[in-house]
Image (cartoon, rainbow over all chains, first blue to last red; front, side, top):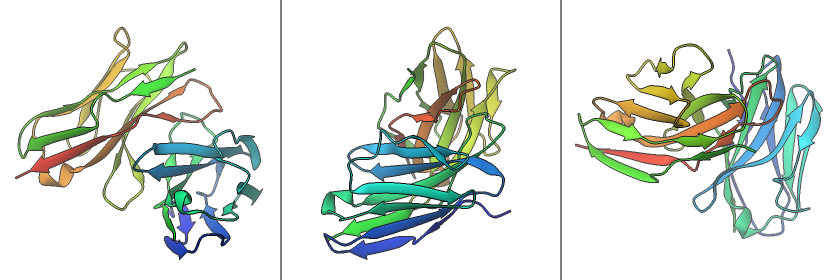
Length: 114
Length: 114
């Protein structure tokens, strides 16, 4: 079975540019999570969705960040405009409806903002 | 509110030595507990989990963890480590029946030296 699929795996961009990260959760999973991982802060939850509805976005750093989940099989995390401090690895994870808390992670998108 | 504390940020050990990675949690309700492993340049993978039943849980590659409710701990152990166990290990907790997210500790980097 396909796991959580993220794209792009690597992105290098210049400050001020728009960045869009994409995620396809595991089919049948009804919750989706976006995390950011940096050396300084570790793993931070940015936002999560249940049944395509954003439940908690308190971890989104600021208005430059936005996330959408237009349907059960796709989500985007957008940064506009990007800044060097946004450089990190962004992980998407999904969770099945039978909730035991276990998350299934994608391989991550490594973002470098110059 | 729940929280997870991993006391050791880095643990260096020699190959074939035993290792223990410590994890303590706080929660006012019953919990599920997890250990995830992250190999370099990869996403997080579930290593083992405690949902209910036997307090000692094992992984397929020789790790084990014991849920200790009185000490609110879920320490990870392996009697003899391999070079290939070098990775970062994350302890995580979620509450029973919660639609909320998984709370992660800050991670412990295990470095196995020959």
